[in-house]
Image (tube, rainbow, N blue to C red; front, side, top):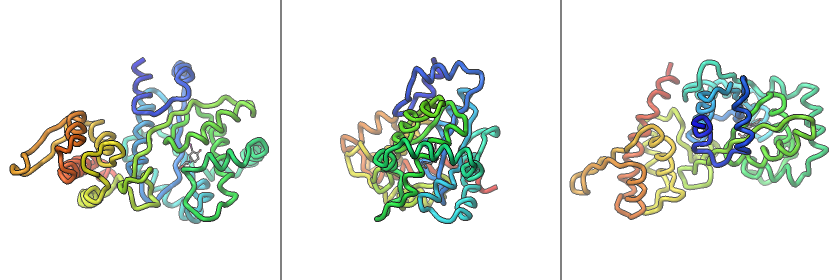
Length: 316
Ligand code: IYR
C-alpha cells in the first residue's frame, strides 16, 4: 500500500490503479519512458525522471528509450546529430539519480526491423487520421505545414510498448492521447496494454503551458547558479498569483520535495528573512504579502543548491 502511494504520489493519473496493483504482484516488472533527445535536459524532464526513480525504488526494472527516430520524425534534425545528443541525455538522466542498472535503448536500434515495421502498418490500417493527429496535439513541433511523419510518430510509440515488453509506461500529460491509443489497440494485436502514469506538465518560465527545449523557456538541470538566477528573475511571476506560477511550481516540484522549508532572504527594511513551509509560502504569496522578487531570489538560490550534485556529476 505504501508502494502504491509512492507510485501514485504527484501523478495526475494512473490508468488504472487496479491494473497497477496486479503488476505489483509480479516478480519481475518493467517500466519505461521515452524521450526525444534534446540539446538541453531541463526541469520538465526531471519531473518524469523523478517518477522513474520512484518506480525503480518500487522494484520496477527501468528502461529509458532514447527516441532518436521519433525526434527525427518530429523535425529535430539529422539522425546523426540526434544520436550524438542522446549520449549527453543519457548522462543527464543518470545524473538525476537513476541507478546503475537502468537500461538505455536507442530507438533506431530496433525501430526499422521488419516485425516492428509490419506492426506499424497494421496499426496504420486501424487508426483514423483524426485520432492520430489529435494524439500529437501537444507533441508536434510548431509548424505551418503538417507532415505525414506526424501520424507515423504515434503509431511507432504504440509499437514501442509492445517491443519493449513493458508493464508500465510513464509520460507527461501531453502523452496521454498516444497512451490511450495504445491501450485501445494493443489488445487488438493480441497484446496486453501497459499501465499508464501521467505526470503534470511544468509551465515554461515564460508562463506558457509547457517547458520545452525548443522555446527559450526552460531551466536546464546543469545550468550554472548565475544562469538559474538570471532565468528565474526574468520568469513570469505575477504578484499574488499562485496558479500557473512557474516559480512556485518549481518550488513545489524541486524544493519542497526535498526540504520542509524555504529560506527567503530579505533586507530588514522589507521585513527581514523568512523561513516558510510550502503552505505558508503559497498563502503569503497569494495574499500579496511576499514580493515576486523576494520569492524569485529564494527559489533561485535554493534550486541552484539542490542541483549542485547534478552539475558536479556532469562535470566529470
Ligand atoms: N513522445 C515522447 C517521446 C517518446 C516517448 C515514448 I513512451 C516512445 O515510445 C517514443 C517516443 C515525447 O514527446 O518526447
